[in-house]
Length: 252
Image (cartoon, rainbow, N blue to C red; front, side, top):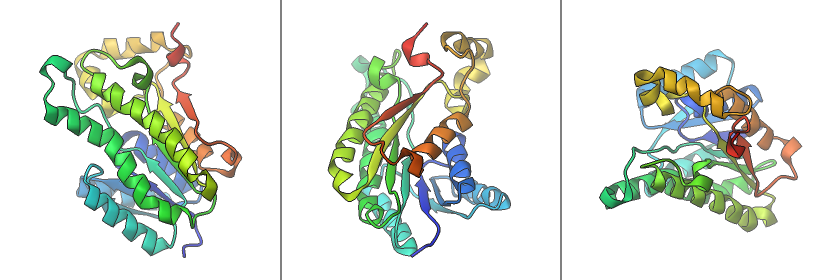
């Protein structure tokens, strides 16, 4: 069994996931990052290792049940335990109004944001039971409360489900001392918004006006909260969702 604590971060080859991997690595975790671009994954591992972080990459699609199960089992067997699972992978998947929404699109967005959490969490539980201060950290969104903007309705629906499965997992796993919480990032300056950032940069910048703290979030802002949730300082927190949005959720 690994003496160092082991953290898995899905979707961690860029953006918030990469920032979380760096933060947990600097906190002393062995970090296992996941993605679907293997060249990018290998490069990120080199970058993390150059910072003195123990890291490796497992390439698999978080929406594929068998791939998730076999890879997380391989990680758990290699290290003898999993201490932290960060279900970071997810996304908008595109925009579609319900009238013209295809079933294929509906299922893809639900798979990306909800199935991924279920598959990874289920596979990790036997190894989390062997972990030290074991915890699962999920990602929801303001869209889970306000149902998202035009065309993002099914994204909002999937994130509302993540909010609920976080609380359900917390209830289910409390007897094993496994905590389950979520973060709800506000508008974070990542490639998630690359479309509007590249075509209408002035609109992107104006979003800060709707945030109490008058700035967009940075990936490190989310990583700091994930670091806290993974630590013993959060040892009495479970079934919670923490808004990381500069007060954006309250509106101004």
